[in-house]
Length: 331
Length: 186
Image 1 (cartoon, helix red, strand yellow):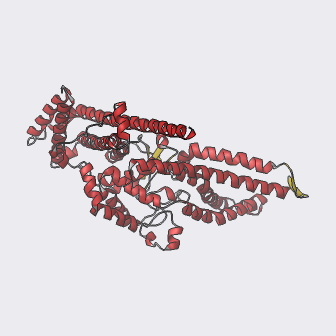
Image 2 (image 1 turned 180 degrees about the horizontal axis):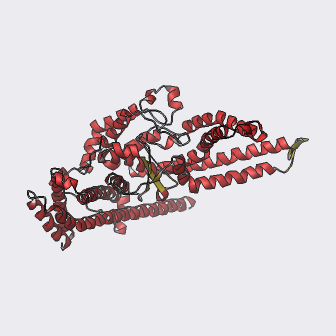
Image 3 (image 1 turned 60 degrees about the horizontal axis):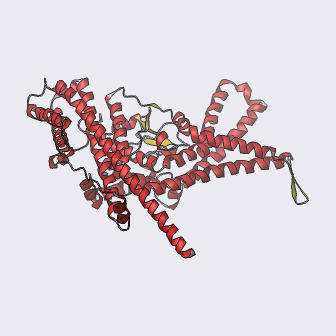
């Protein structure tokens, strides 16, 4: 089991990863900007020396720094917006139950109570995000609320609490907004271009139309590649760790076990807006739960989530193993 | 001479670090205790509402209800921690029984106010259980730090003591801390 002290080690790793991520993002922009400078001639290579002023490079630095700051401070609202989430209100008994369970698990994890959001979608899923535990958000789908009993909900929320406790939420949020932002933008552009072509056919031949088509083409080509890159950057060990920590919080391996089994029975993936945020969710929202059973080398390399079957197996081992015995003694 | 200075410096740094970690462990224990306290007080406030809501319906569990009310009175006026915790444990086991029995009364489950109250009591019970779990974890950490060598030398010198675990009474452990009612609408 993950002890409380291990959260601090994981937190350090996540702080470091976030710095590397932002640094890499800004550096990439500056290099691209300087490339544009060379193309435009504002920077020139003469007699082995570089002359001129890196105007575009400097602009890129400002843009990338600004975007990093926006992502850090407004990442959670941006993500919530992109998945069409709204605040969870205690307007009916089952919503109140979810709010109560979040409070219970916050006490178990010794964390401040995260704000609660709901996605109106029937596919059972959940994620947590935010820059630190004091600015954290837990978001569940209506499908999760409808299909889980209280105990299973504790398991799922415990899993999300663990992501909050070890600052996974910060790294994953920055990955979502900085890298996944391009995938989101691509989805958005494609949608807009469909509307445009339906509305006004005359637009197609104009220069602006051509440019937009070109941008969409480029984005459409690099977006899937970037999604894969993200998947590779995201360590799937996080999910196993969060599962284990959830058991530590609930002292009940069967809670999350039953929740995952129930999710595995459902077939429906989330409907929209999740391409750049897939890695945030407790189970892969893009595939129907049974799809990702493949765990060959490449499937492992290219997936944001470990196979659900393996996670269930590990939890079953905990439920039957010595963990359950020692847990019930402590509880 | 230089070596001696280095050794002293390392020792000083160690003592400071060990002292600070003892302080945070102790604060953690106190903080966790306050969490429990908040939840126990909230439970005291809910009990009169519960009695009001169910007394018309529940004829069979009148004894349990009376026992809970008496235990609450005892807990509120308890002169010391030990007797207070004993009374709180009685409340926990009594409430557990009532919440379980409430399942058998369809009239109760039809009442929106009772449902709300039941949810509130269930989550309070769970929060007490989780707060106790967090408290006992914090105590475990503090006690390990004060007992292990060489930390125990520093703990003794600066007057740090281990804390007591919050034990429930045996019946109280038999009460499940999960899912009293509100099964999914599958």
